[in-house]
Length: 144
Image (tube, rainbow, N blue to C red; front, side):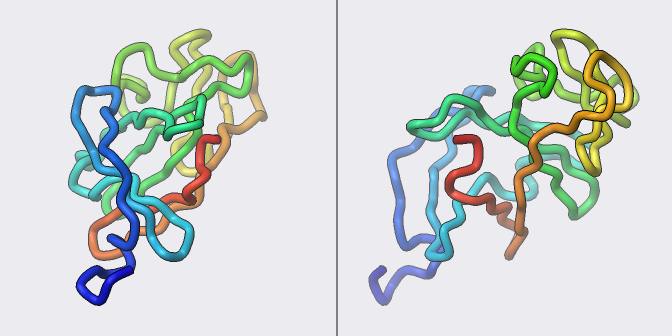
């Protein structure tokens, strides 16, 4: 880290392209977290997918509710397929649950527990998040 950079810009890798075609820089924080996105990148009440990081196989998905963001590994606990059927489409029509495109399993947004479908009682793999200064951070190894 140089005196001119803050902790959120201590290390910067090359840009990666997300599933919706937008490019987002992968920034690493000193504390072992990485930047997922800016809070405003996810419209309130909507969801967004994120490609796997270098060396990773499975991407992440996030749902925003006001100033809260719920992040999960983009993999159904039933057979491990991605949850979305098209980029950034993870939610039911009414926006109340996360829906698996493969079998229609429904998951609560706030805790990822399956409430309907072939994996009732199982949960999505939750990813710890922290929001600082309008930026959403996840552990650097999330999705690996």
